[in-house]
Length: 279
Figure 1: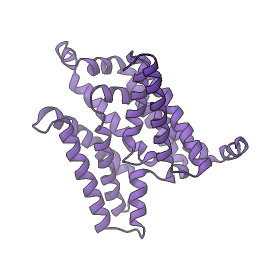
Figure 2 (figure 1 turned 90 degrees about the vertical axis):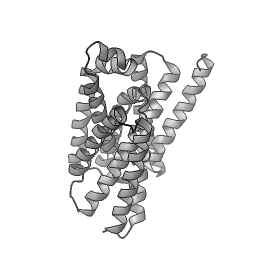
Figure 3 (figure 1 turned 135 degrees about the horizontal axis):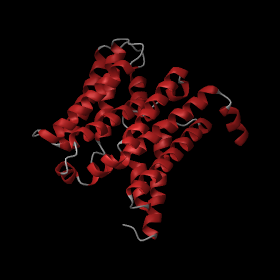
C-alpha cells in the first residue's frame, strides 16, 4: 500500500488535491472555533446552499469560470445574513434556515428548467455531496486556492485579538469602543470565501462538517481558546489529508471520507474528554 501511495504521489493532480484539501481544512478550522462559540455553526449551511444556487445559475449561463459569480454572490449573502440576523425580526437560526431552503430549492429548480446536461441527477449529487473534481484540479485553481488561503490566515492572525474579544463578550467589546459590527462582518466574509473554496472538496451539504467537527473535537481536549484553535487546525488537517489519501487508495467519495474521518476523530476525542473528567 505504501508503494501504491508513493506511486500516486508522483502524479501532479494527486499532489494538487492534497495541497488544496489541507489548505481548505486549515482555513475552515481557524474560523470554526469562533463560529461554534458564537453559535453561528450553521452559517456554513446557509452560505453553502447559496453557493449551490449560484453554481446552478453559472451552469445555465455557461460561464467558463463560475467563481466569478459564486464568490461575490456568496459574500453578499453572508453580509445580508449577518445584518438580517442582528437587526431585523428574522433572527439568527430562522434567517439561516430560510436562506438555506430558499437557495437550495431555487438552485435545483433552475437546473431542472434550464438544464444543459444529460446527467442532471449526477450533477446535482456531485455538487451537494462533493465529487472527484478535487482530483482534476488545474494549476490555476490550485494557485487561486493558495492565494485565498493565505489571505484568510493573514486576516485571522491580524485580527485574532479582536475576534477573541468579539467571540466571548460582544457587549463588553461594543461598550469598550470596539467596532463589533466590522469584525462580525469580517468573520462572515471570510466564512463565505472558505465555503466557496470547500465546495469541490466535500460538497455543499457537508461543508459544515469541516467547520464544526474539528472545533468540537478540540473543545473535548482543551479549554483555552488558543489551544482549542491550534488543536482544531491539527485535527482538521490530519482528517483532510488522511481522508483524501484513503479515498484515492480505496476509491471512495472524497467528501464523505473526510467527514467520516472527522466524525471518527470527534468520537475518540469525546472518549478522551470523558476519561479526563470532561463533560
